[in-house]
Image (cartoon, rainbow, N blue to C red; front, side, top):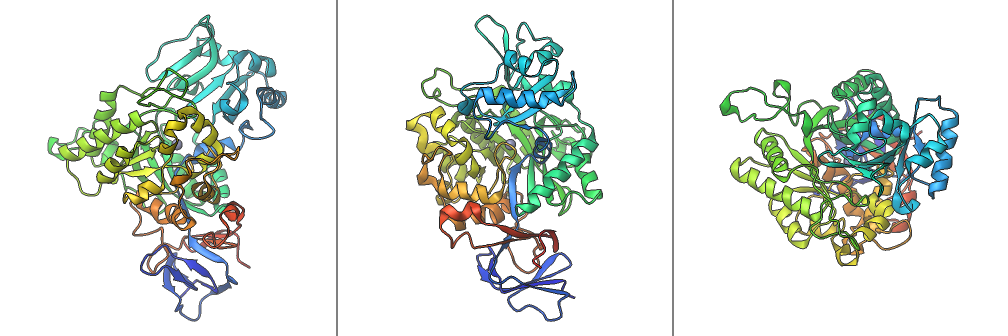
Length: 539
Ligand SMILES: [Zn+2]
């Protein structure tokens, strides 16, 4: 029995063997036929020429972080365009926040505000409240004096590896905490109750479905500063049990969580999770993905590790850990059978990761490991060739060009503009390009990400390394089949063909047929996950 048939559709299948179709049949959550659809379906929807694609798959997002940010002060977009406006927004929220409680904001960018917020001004805006403002990159934050006092660093900084407590010329902390120094403030709120995380997942899922997302990969749970609870997976499992997961989720495990297992010496399980659970465990709805390792920091925050200093600066960023320790962590995870996804932005960090992947593959050969480099932001030509040769999947974010592009261009200077967030040269080198947002770092709607990949313009209108633009067709491929490949799931999703999961998005128009400047404004008419309508109804 066929459950649903879509007819009069403009189907872009992303299947190279059969790129186009006009009808799709669905039964029991799977696609059963194209074009010659069986008669007697329970429901027939006439799409009147609307475009059908495989559901979008965000290959790198922070679902819980995004869900939580929906309830925080938005300090990343108008009307917050200056520090004074930011302080005013904090003051408004403080009025409805009890003394001692938290005022949390996300998304500020000092490149747009003219500087980082300062603890003293935050104290004036929110007297007696705890203020915590996250940078748009997620790699740094600012807190006020109440929080600094809680941490015992209100008058002097502490030293800590992989991070920095920023101070003024007199040695007094300014409130800015970089990279692993964020763990300090994290210790005041972590772990979050699982019920709070489950609600955040449900809120995020509702938004994802409206935007055509049917799968996403959460880029790090369970440990380190991106985590919300050591038992974070249980929040996803609860969301699933309560019917609130909404989309298919792949979870990356933070490297901090891996530990020796005590297995037999011949098993090569030098680092893993209890019971030997690793990449691929789970099912079509909820599964474990790669292990997530951080090699360096943020480009707009100027902490990412470059070979040469930032433009008009004498600093070149830093690694998140000792180079030898990072290498050892990557090799141990590879040896233990994990897919490895390492965050590396600067060319120095990228070299370290490519070297570690090469060593891991040489010492412990393994077929088709599909190791990833998240962001892959400042990339020398020789590094593209090496990544391709190693079979590495680079995971850049299209929307970064739009929202963070001006800060990135300024950070590296004109001589390195052509190295920024490559796409086209990766495809030309034979690499697979997934689609991803890194939400909540920037807006996460896939059509905005595709717009960024194709149009490559910053919010001020400057071209952003336009030679690396891709076509709408290539961007759609990235957000569907490319992401499925990065998740080792291309045999079940990412294209529309008989036997594949019935995960589809219906768009008002064909992104490959409209003028590129209209892509961002196309409408999502419906999102179907496993044959069920998650958004819209096509009535
Ligand atoms: Zn991320």
